[in-house]
Length: 171
Image (cartoon, rainbow, N blue to C red; front, side):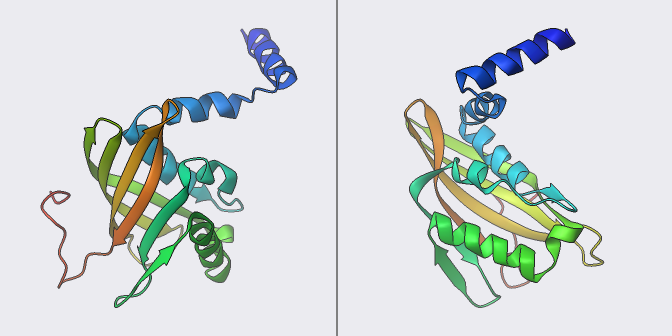
């Protein structure tokens, strides 16, 4: 069996088809699989960082990402701006040395034709931090094109005492 897997891997390399491409293709077949792949892609152990090309492959080039960047403000990013902001966070907070996780706690999905909306309650945490995980809500919109699903936009909010979790993602 091991020889068969090695032969398949060698053939894939010779044909220019990476094993990662097959995994990406499978991950992009449903809106939920794209969303799960995104959270998995931005989660990494100490000593590593995300594969930003893999992250970019989940989005349409024109994607818009609106993130809560302080308790009072949001910022609008292009795809490259989003990646750049995440890289700055990793560098400034020393996260590469510690590791980071963003895990889905709960999600609600709606698919209609070639559009989808996935509402996600997540928890973000820097490995080893004494602070508890930070909860957030992402509203993710996807479109189906070329036989697969793509993220078109993400809008983010952080719950507070004044902004409690909405019933759609609450318990």
